[in-house]
Image (cartoon, rainbow, N blue to C red):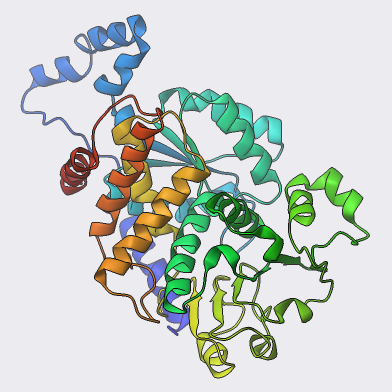
Length: 419
């Protein structure tokens, strides 16, 4: 594991040296004073008039065709918690850099001071008119579920919450390949989820859509497994209906003890906190246990301890261990495909398509216990995800721009190559 102090010192050094991680650059070369007349007044009036007459022209005449707004209120920043919008800006800048570097997408970080759902939704609705899509990030649960649902219903551009759909897609890809290596059937597997925040609630939803028998899934929060006999059921029904729905659908045997939930389990997926998975629990799992310990910055159990306890495959959310489950494998290519097809929306099926393409990419490269998903150095995966997502939008009637996978692969390759 890399030294945290060294990483922090270098991160501060880089940000101070460059004054942040992104900047705005023109696409048009200015060679003379006359060129300013084309890009600004008086020539620009013709461009504005064209858009005023036909709003769809904005996709061809402005940067909208390739632009995503990254919106957060900084209430659940990875590893830091509620730091607020200003302190979240370095994280959003990093996300923007990844978008451009790996997906060729212009991503604009927009942290906002909005802690009420109606206020947050109104702000995003009002700025979305000039965006090609909205990427939600680092928003506390259950606030994030309501915001995503409302924005998906009320906006005219596609909306994605990376901590829900991106994390779920990357995790599903890892589970597809892990169960293949362990000779398990993912759809019939007994799965324990540690943590009931945005990541695992979205993963549960995606797994159900993928065909997993969610009665075999046990989801635990700080009070233990969700089950029908919990005395806080009515409170959850009022305050967190997403967790309440999981309570009704999951844990068909009504296991109420965290330790017992591991009896015969095939998979454990943690999006929780350091120490949340005990070594002795892994010993109670079925043959060839799969352990996804994805808490950041410190996993629920380290790979060294998990393997010693009998784990067959271990993933974390860290880049200094094998099998990093990272939503950065998903969003740059996914939004490349969404923008290139001019898709009207993103849903959980989109996340599943991306996950299957990630899994297939790794399978074609060659799977083993330390290589269940690609890494961010596998640049080709972003082209594959982009073309798969774009073609899926075409097949489902969600795309304004039509084409086959080969067309969208070529378009993504050309745009990403520009940077």
